[in-house]
Amino acid sequence: MRTSALVTGVSRGIGYAITEYLASQEIDLILLPQDPERLRQAKQSIIAAHPKCEVSTALIDMNSVRKIENQLDAIIEHYPPISIFINSEGILRFGASEMPVAQLLELLTINLISTLVISNKLAAKIKLRRAGHIFTPSSIAGLENKSASAAHASSKAGLISYNQALYSKLLPYGVNATCLCPGSANTDMTNDDG
Image (cartoon, rainbow, N blue to C red; front, side, top):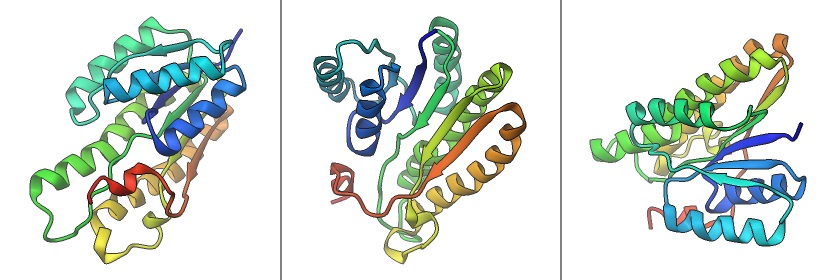
């Protein structure tokens, strides 16, 4: 049986690099982007470079927790069993106490809450098969909070803490949970907030 991976945040940066690596290993992909145009470009590039990889896509609204639950249920029902989950969706907004409430809610919903909702649903499915892996790219910012990006760093600290607990909970089932904490990366995400 072929291995399937579900990946969020696939259209750019670290998420795209991880997706390309998985494709090179002939792991079938289920890509969940927010941006349909960027997804189209990413999917074309992956298929051109790795024609043996099967690539499926489904749009997901990471800024709406209610929509995510319904969308994810349909995805899990429709696609073959998922062995690998990569939580790579995220946004960057600079600021702390002066950040407008709407921006703070968007940041925490996309970077933290939606990721936890998806992780919880997939963890429940993966642990039944007693094999699999959940990867969550966070950031060194979650360990070394800088005042210019305190809200962003807080969302990343939440991912780190959550993944430490997830690791302990899933290990007895033969499922691994890994949190990656890269430093600043040269991707277009660093331009998200000017």
